[in-house]
Image 1 (spheres, rainbow, N blue to C red):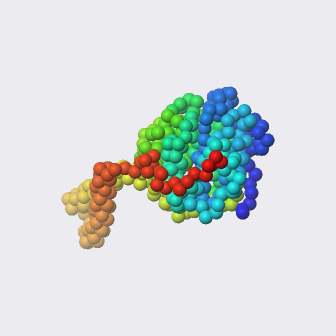
Image 2: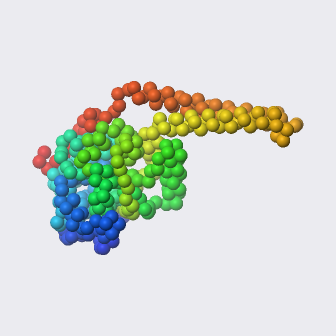
Image 3: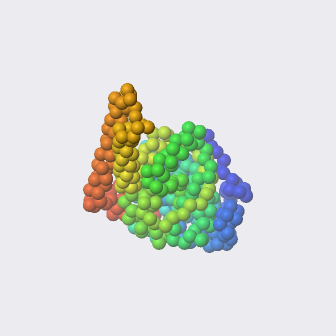
Amino acid sequence: MGEYHAPITNGIGKWPTDGSKLKNTQAIAENDCEYSTILAFMNKNWCVISPVYNDWDCAERLVLNLNSLDADANAPSIFFLNDGSSQEPPDSLTSALNGGGIIQLTRNLGHQKAISIGLAYVKECEKFDYVVVMDSDGEDRPADIEILVAKSKNHTGSVIFAHRKRRHEGVLFKTLYYIYRLLFQVLTGQSIAFGNFCLIPAKQLNKVVHVSEIWNHFSGGIIRSRIPYCTVPVDRGIRYFGTSKMNFTALIIHGISSITVHLDVVAVRLLMASAFVVVFMLMGFVATLVLPQFQIGDDFGLVIGLISVLMSLVVIILFIALSLTFNVLFYRIQKPFIPLLEYRKFVVETSRPDA
C-alpha cells in the first residue's frame, strides 16, 4: 500500500468525517448560487459511477468521503465498475454503497468502456435524477461535486464537466498532455481540456448511452454527439494511496482514442491539407521554371530531386487521407455499437447488499 495523503481541503476546512455540514464557498462564489440551492439539488436521488482496477483502498476512502459530504443532503448510491481487478474488493464495501453495488466486468476493458457500461446499467436498471462520473483514486475530489451542481443551476440539461485548473504530474507528463491537446485541436477543430469527471442530468442520460463513440473515449464522444455540455474549473486532487497508473504509453493510447472518435473530421482535414500542400508545391515548381528571379542554374537537378521527394511524401499522405475518408464512409453504413444495447455482454454480475 502506498503513502496515504490526507483529504484535500475544499476552501473552508478538511473533509468532515462526522457528517458535519460542508459548504463549498468556491461553488457559491463562482456560480452565483446559494448553498440552499446546492443542498436542494443534492437532496435529489443521485448516484456516483466509478471504475476501479485494484484500487480498493482508494475506493473505500472515496466512499467515506462521499458519505460525509453533507449531513443534510442525500448520500449518493455508489456503483463501482470492477474492471477485471486481480484483487477482490473488501467484503464490507458493498454495505456502504447506499443501495449501489459493485458491477463485475468480464475482463479488463479500460476506464472508458467501464464508464459506458456503468452508465448503461444505471439507465436500464435504476432511476436517478442525475449521475456523477468520477475516478475512485482521489484525483477527482468529492467536494468538487458541489461546484458541478452549482454550475448546473444556470445550465439545466447540460452535461457539466470538470475543467482542470491545476495538475500534480511532472513536467514531462504535462508537456506531453499539452501536445496531445494541441494535436486534438489541430486535427479535429475542437478543444478538449477535461476528462471523465462530470455530472449528467437524467434527461441527457438516455442520449449519452446511445452514443457509440463513448465506448472508445467518453468525453470525446460527448463532444462528438453534440449533447449540450459546459465546463467548470476545478483543481485536480491528489491520490489517496499509491501512484497513478496513467503512464506515457497509456496517455498516448488515450490520446489516439480521443482523436479516432473524430476520425471522419481528421480524414477530411488531412485530405484538405494534403491537397493544399500539393497545389502550393506545384506552383513553386512552375515558378522555378518560368520566373527569372527563381532561376536556379547549376543546382537545378538537386532542387528537382528535393521537390520530387517532398511531392512523394505529400502524395503518400494524400492517399492515407483518402483511405481514411473511404474507411469512415464505409463505417457509416455499418450498424453502430450502442452501449445501452450491448453492455450486458460485459457484465458478469452485480454485487449488492440485498443480492
